[in-house]
Amino acid sequence: MPSSFSALPIPALSPDGWVRAQVRGRVGFLTLHRPGALNALSLSMVRDLTAVLLHWAADPAVLAVVLQGQGREGKPPALCAGGDIRFFHQAALAGDPRLEDFFTEEYALNHLIHTYPKPYLAVMDGITMGGGMGISQGARLRIATEHSKLAMPETHIGLFPDVGGGWFLSRCPGHVGEYLAMTGEALGAADAVAVGLADVQVRSADLPALMDRLASDTLLSADDVLACVTGVAQPVAESPLLLPPRRESIDLHFSQGSLADIAASLATASGEFARHTLAALHKRSPLMLAVALEQIRRARTMTLADDLRMERDLVRHCFHLRPGTASETVEGIRALVIDKDHQPRWNPAQLADVTEAMVADFFVSPWPAHVHPLRALA
Image (cartoon, rainbow, N blue to C red; front, top):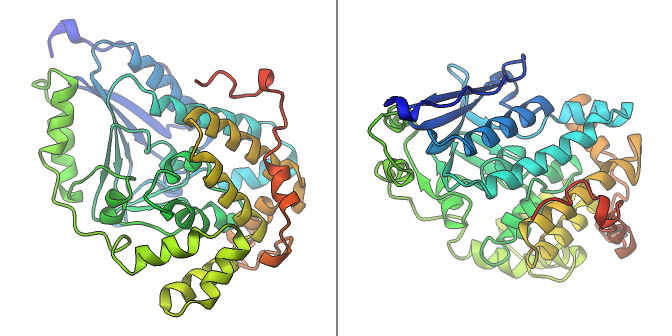
């Protein structure tokens, strides 16, 4: 590489080594290196990603940035399975202030990625869920593979689709956003491209050679970087999600005015899709399903910054409106990953018992606008 393009020294990263940064050629490569936890995000990882991205944004030697996940030999790949929910559980019960820092800094990172001044490419090979979607959906190119499993599964743990999920899910066609937010359904590459959550599909086996080409000294512009990827993209198969009658069913049921109306619509419908979907909803927190539904519908008319501020309000309420073990989120994490009994004790337990007042409480900001932790986002 010509000396005039020598990259600036990368800032010191956390000693845990869970984020690795390297400039090869004219491209900065960020690798999530926590494979034993499916590259789940910690606070140190959020801080490392933010520091390096800000550094490379100001480095003229770096044309573009690639985000990828370290895999485990012989195991399915993962970019990032989400946030570290064991930490969420422990921190919520202990009153650890780092829980507040995590969400504030994670959402600021999500906004940085969406507004990044250089092409940012996310390699969504394998599991890309929750927080993994948050660090992918703002990418200039979102690269899916045949192994991709994309989802916002937060309602499984009594949470809502955060990290900008309100913004990007609400922009899916029709009422697919409500469906994905409430059920947490995972999408493969064809579905993800069809609903606007991925841009191109590349064969997983072709990724190493593609990364080597991206690292080549012959790439002299951001357009060269993007063309390098699109040049190896595969034709995308037809989306099963958007084929009738499934798409028609999604729009019919998830266009209903309320959670109770959606459940009633599914209950009166025939067919496997309605039965499967209603069964999935009955496993989720009724309260947080209603919150997620309201979130998606509000986000449709919001800017990304306003959506992230709303989500910061919501996540604060998830842990503090009903503190400790009374939190739907703490209970959901307990049932899924702590005790692993898969028997969450939701409150209220029935969809019909969720009131408008319960939901409205989540949308009252805990902070005046001038001291909101994300007030600087624009």
